Amino acid sequence: MEIPFSHVLLFFVVLVSSHNPKSNLFCSADPTDGFTEVPLTEANFVLQKPYDIPLDERYSFVDGVRRLWVYADDKPHDPSSHTQPRTEVRINGLDYSSGVWQFEGHGFVPNGTSGATIAQIHGAAHGATTIILRIYDGDMRYYSGNLIATDLYDRWFRLNIIHDVDGGKVTVFLDGNQVFQAADKGPGDLYFKCGVYAAPTNISYYMESRWRDIKIYKK
Image (cartoon, rainbow, N blue to C red):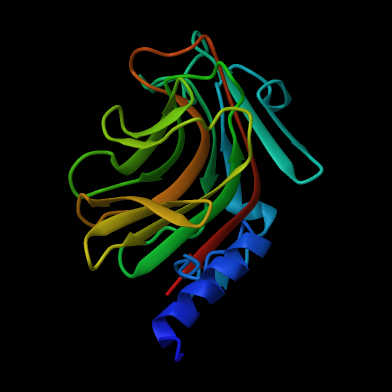
């Protein structure tokens, strides 16, 4: 009896999957495919922290891991600023206003941090930011709205943010999978940031995130 080819293919897929639970024959391309990595030095990592606190009381860089933390009653990063407290890495020297750019970093948010922006694209034609990714009770949201991902506490995750300025869109990937896309807010003086930046309301007293293997790509 002749076995249809479609049945043979289905058997092969089941056989491979049963021997390798992590296999995914239909996985999407890596978000960095087609991009060129931009070399970074420590000069590209500018720290913003409460203006009256020594850096080593809000930031550490040990064994490749950048740990950033802040308290709800900390001062802003500048005496003349009226913004919320923050300890953030600002990617310096790679501001952009056109093209396609990408941030990649492996992040970690400890249990208890809530109401904290952990990554953003600063700058836009309309408003101060193109995108803000906040953690609320272990979940990631677009600003304080759209739910992007859940259960991120106490684990490392790979975050990729692609900004197609000319196409007017921002795409977010977690662990290699696209999880969100939104229209941007127009071109401007744009740059990437990560760390902890307190939301206007509903924040925990202590906020922390950790980052390693931060990279910038462009097309």
